[in-house]
Length: 216
Ligand code: E4P
Image (tube, rainbow, N blue to C red; front, top):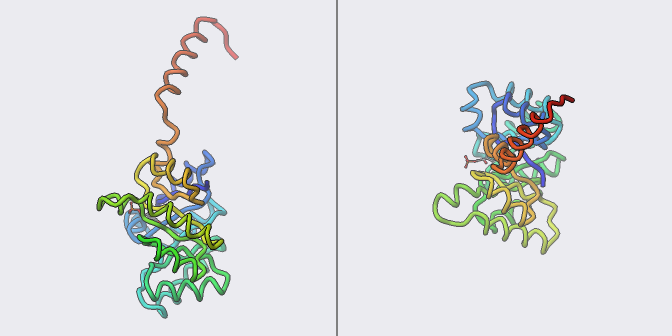
């Protein structure tokens, strides 16, 4: 399973990349607002850190304006994936951009049928938003499993990019289902490292090592 960092914070991406945890990055308008910096600068810097796909989202809602914005975004770097919402115009933009060889991430997917449409429009990624479904008491992982089955039934090449991840368990469950990618906030990715027995083991080894009086 590939990991994307879901953030517009360049310093955090750099740190995760040093641990080999960044196969790409996703951003959205909220994350860019949080970064408090110009979108183009942020995306350019991220694309210099990773050669993996970096999702940059259009803000327009109509097809013509989406295509104009996509033109600006895809010129920033070769590894930019243009992110479009799962709407009629978003699917039109997805179809046009994908046919032109641009990677498209269709975002804000909340149903298996929406995911089916994204695949038919040629999306490179579809982003089911798990946490936001969990927030309204619908199991987001059921959606991931259903999309997996549908894509496998028809051999769709669209990659399932599990998004709106809030917990380490979301990542484990997505991996068990066979989702292609997971995008998560840096804090969640880093929390995968932690285990109390690892910390305890280090403590015990250190104590015993001190008793030997040796140094390496
Ligand atoms: C994914 O591409 C989105 O940027 C992100 O996962 C949304 O997560 P949220 O629901 O925590 O805002």
